[in-house]
Image (cartoon, rainbow, N blue to C red; front, side, top):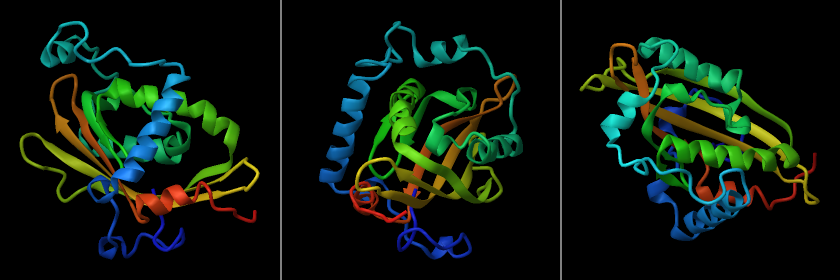
Amino acid sequence: MASTGGGGGGGDDDDDVKLSNYKGTSGAVKGLVSGLTAVVNAFGVGGGDVASSGSSGATRRERREARPPPSTPRNPTALAADIAREFTEAKYLWTGDINPEMYDLYCTFTDPTLSFAGLETFQRNLANLQPVLSRLVRDSDVEQLYSCELAGDGKGGGGGGAVRARWRMTGNLRVPWRPRIDLEGQTTFTFKDYGGDRGCLITAYQEEWGLSAGEAVMQLVTPFKW
């Protein structure tokens, strides 16, 4: 989520922009965000740990097979269209309102500050963060979805591929110094086509930002005149 040079710009030259990712983020910033996430989760609906994916003793394959199939299996084109709607209609970057049936149970989630595996963990993090966002964020919006399309021919080999979305999100925070979040980014949704009644499911979610993670975090403490 970020904007080259602080927020403006469009998607035309995105291929020439160096985006920040988890590997390039300092340990201090990762530790700060991880610590804040742990604090939010400690007081949130999920409490401590969510039920781990292996808690029942079942294997990953057994858990996948026991999971109800999606209401409608998606081919790559349908998956890309539904991902676009997550941005434009659900505005999930602010609301956390995702459709979990599009994701594999063991999907990995990575942005420049955090990386973890498991759909349950992702849902818990979003559920615990949402009350905080509801209280503190005003005028939030996914201001523009520049593009959301299959990467290349959509076929990455092994029955999978990727959808790549480029976007911008903005919002003002209700705190005394009135900071403004203005971020552009790119998210790559890697998927696997399981076929049959399951179709394509997202197995890896990777966000990259136009700002460094440190610059993005600094927006939280920088005064902004509304």
